[in-house]
Length: 52
View 1: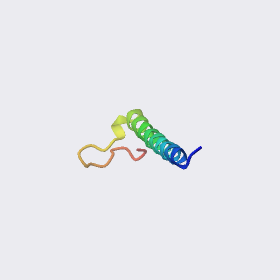
View 2: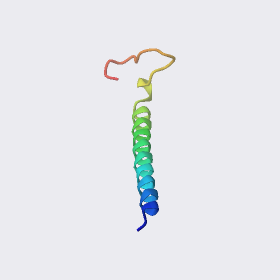
View 3: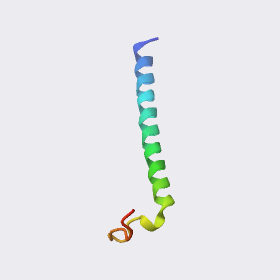
View 4: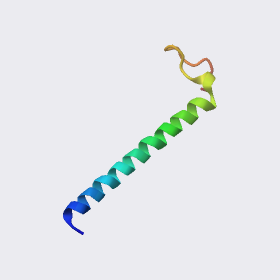
């Protein structure tokens, strides 16, 4: 395997890991906001429930 191919594979793998990490975090945020929508911040106000 040539150094150029190794470099492209390493960059591709790193980009894949970063995209998976960002996608997983976006999914967790979406699930958290949809599970208790009444607890999400509205217009800069604090949540009404202490459990939020």
